[in-house]
Amino acid sequence: DVKVTQSSRYLVKRTGEKVFLECVQDMDHENMFWYRQDPGLGLRLIYFSYDVKMKEKGDIPEGYSVSREKKERFSLILESASTNQTSMYLCASSSPGEETQYFGPGTRLLVL
Amino acid sequence: AQSVTQLDSQVPVFEEAPVELRCNYSSSVSVYLFWYVQYPNQGLQLLLKYLSGSTLVESINGFEAEFNKSQTSFHLRKPSVHISDTAEYFCAVSEPGGFKTIFGAGTRLFVKA
Image: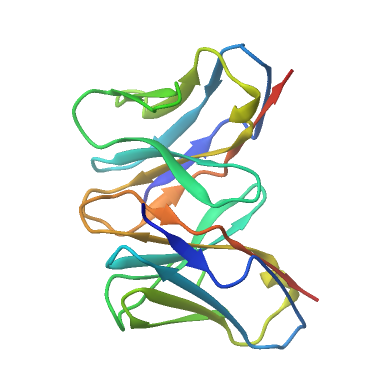
């Protein structure tokens, strides 16, 4: 079974803090994704990566950055957390040609 | 640009009743279509998908969806729901060979005893 793990299930941070969200997948997938999930808005793509050190902006990249130094790990960075970044963050991975995305359990982030 | 519309934000239904969760999409090219399910406090998992071939696709737990190209729809149905089907369901669309998947806003299915 594909396993995607996220470093924290719940996080509480203060405005202005730098926040790191880590995601690790164990299926050697080339593609990795970061989404945020908000009620009534579904999932919105923040960033994705199709290879090590490669990254592409999604639909809402402002205020976020990413890092992919190893194939299995994809990190989301909030450089200076703000209250409007309070959300559920979901990581996913996929293999080219398979189309299905495999999701982690999510990190619920509260920024005070 | 692709988009996905889930026509109902919440669907309450009694146990053993049939249910239909509606999904319409827009795209100028051929598409792949998906339904994902999210149980409480969990990530999303694939329920079923249409890539090509038969327009009727089924899941292992009794859900089915039909790709209707003329109506640009991919509605999800189950003839008899269980309490355990209570979850949020997301319709999604992607382009063959593309990286991005577009998700709908989700439909919360509440199954009542």
